[in-house]
Image (cartoon, rainbow, N blue to C red):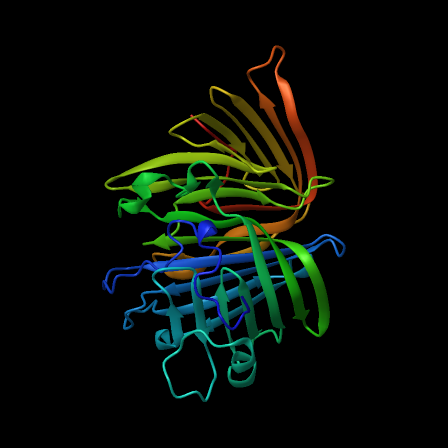
Length: 366
């Protein structure tokens, strides 16, 4: 399989919700995608965030956006007002947005050579390939990239196959927004050019997720890492939010781990999850089920970078991120006496985020 043939490779790792969700409805709608590569040797991370809002066109918020959180939490943003330049597949992970181009036909996946030749501004991504060229005309920041992806973990274990991150109810349009981890861990090989500095990498930790719905949660937090010290086969995704469910609001959170072929899932329907999250700087979570307990603490002394997210008022600055978080993660078995430590892992390249609000006090679970 080459990047010229992105169709249905590694089907066993295509998660639920990998395809595009928009059903041509005129209602307020967004879908967003997140690709990330961490470069352990350089101690840097590149996070690529894409969104499409009101794809039918004609609304004040119709259009696409592309944001990059780059080295040392640097930031690039490019908007694409023409929704007709956006494309995505409904049956698998594949999307892109064409900016300036002379191609006469409707946008869709191009071979890497064709994209490089004909697309002056834009991006395209699948489960196994990611490529783009972006320039922020306001700041002059620019980035170009091409890399192949080898998925290792989607979301789930071998026994149950690939799972919906928010459970079976996520197939019903009752949650706002939906959330799906597309690839908890993979390996990326290729290059990224950031403002003229070229980063080349082989088998670098990679990650992907997505959201969709009417708007982001009212308030949320996120802790994510798949680049640990001395633990190459470990990936963590944790987060929570206050979201809409039909006509009421609820606060929910999860901690999920892929480790040496096993999936450890702590979610509202099978575990007790608690949290204590500062408006910025400290994320602390615990969870337990009948077999395991998990604890994590993430901290940062970085100021973080403000990022845009889809809201009811369009793409606006409502969250703060850094990829320089310090994380301690411990997983224990409850079956032994005393409880057995399965692993204790650390990282200084953890992604952390808080969003929504405004936040003025520490958020503690009920």
